[in-house]
Image 1: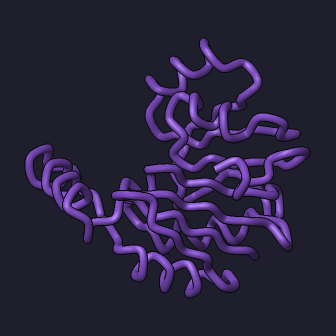
Image 2: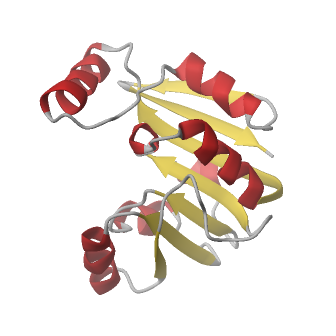
Amino acid sequence: MREVLEPAGTRILDMGGGTGAATLVFGEGAAELVVLEPDPRRIRAGTKAHAPVTFVQGVAESVPYGEGRFDRVVSLMSFHHFAHGDRALAEASRVLAPGGRLVVVDFDPSTPRGRWISFFEGRLLHHPFVFSTPAELERRIVAASFGAVRRERLGSTALLVAER
């Protein structure tokens, strides 16, 4: 993840970053780390544990920052939680500086484990998750004004990287 993100000296926004534990690891060396998280309990836990991370309560579909504010926008295992994924991608595009990079890692619902997670979270837990196949997610990213998308399968997840 770090080699794709190239965090040194960058400003990183982690959409749906929870407590910021992963953000701190993949963003080591960044000039600024911001976690946008809707759950105040996760923010409280993260604030206590991860001092170099700035936590902001909010949703990916309405990022409270201006245009071109970040060099990297990351969604690590959180994209399926976004109620309006296309709006979240538009917001990622808006807040990325020219030449900025979007990195999305999420479950692939076409894999056996991805199907199980989709069933478990959606049907058994009754959460309104929307899982996109890597090909669908790639189309959505391109439609949100990103350039070519690099896509890789990582076991039961997919990694998608796009430049603005």
